Length: 284
Image 1 (cartoon, one colour):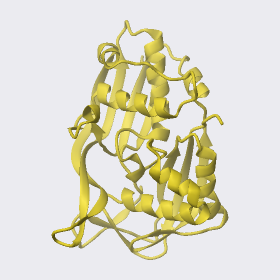
Image 2 (cartoon, helix red, strand yellow):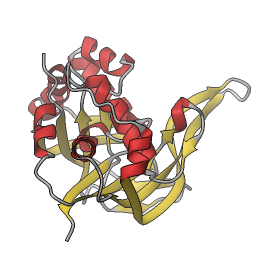
Image 3 (cartoon, one colour):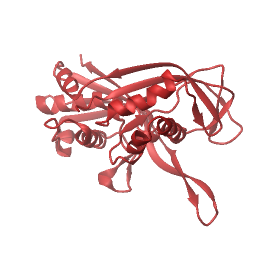
Image 4 (tube, one colour):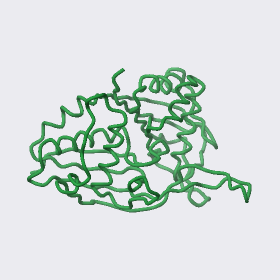
């Protein structure tokens, strides 16, 4: 089966006042897996256990009230909140069905630790790797803007060192790995870090760094759960090409940029990290 990257956007409303951690991505991921597990246990297990990043999710976006607890926020039932799920796994049809069927067609709630979210609206888009490549050939002097909507955590060459700047090599090396792990046979990209460094430039437009909670673990000595944190960057960055950038390298980078909205960037994308909005435009 040919993989077709999918994106699902859900508009949700809390049933009651709902307190959430500032980084709620791991809770959304757990709640989503729970929904999928009740619908199709095999697909849920595949999504969780897959060595590739089968799905990416954004954090909830909307207007929150302040919480009395540090590093927490309150979702208000007077407001709606949106989050996006990207699916790049070759079994995307099964994963899409295991999300849409219970949440949208069966009107099942998304159950978080302290309350429930009801789906009020859903939209979906899909593309193909072929379309991503073909649509990237239509630009003469392109630029790319990445808006990193949630903390983006990129490990340097599979080490424990996290990149704290949206450097072109870090961002697009991450995307090459994601693309090559799920693309159809014959569509792998062979971009080298040196080519990204030589033929691209980056200019941050806004930029900050902070830690984000991606999971919890049991502290055996203290006997209670503790947060697992990762460091990351957030903000917007423009990427440009040098005048002598070869067309094949430029086109590959553009295809990866459009793919990023489905795959996310860096580590822990299923737990709310590395969600991006991408604009590709023509330089004047």
